[in-house]
Length: 62
Image 1 (cartoon, rainbow, N blue to C red):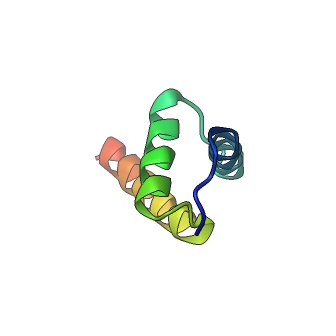
Image 2 (image 1 turned 45 degrees about the vertical axis):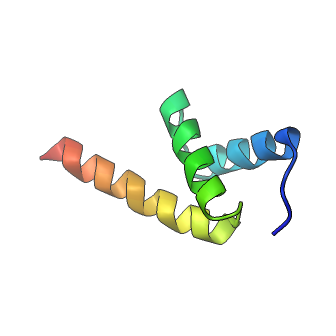
């Protein structure tokens, strides 16, 4: 997958934040980390983000 410029990266992150109803700088950092790890592949980032947020919510509730 081609490298995205910084504007495209910001747009990708904002789209993921909106789609998953997330807020905050820590979530943006998590999305950026996952996106860089998986070469900005939207499906893989979405899957890993969903898993990470579920695990985080579970940990907070116990």
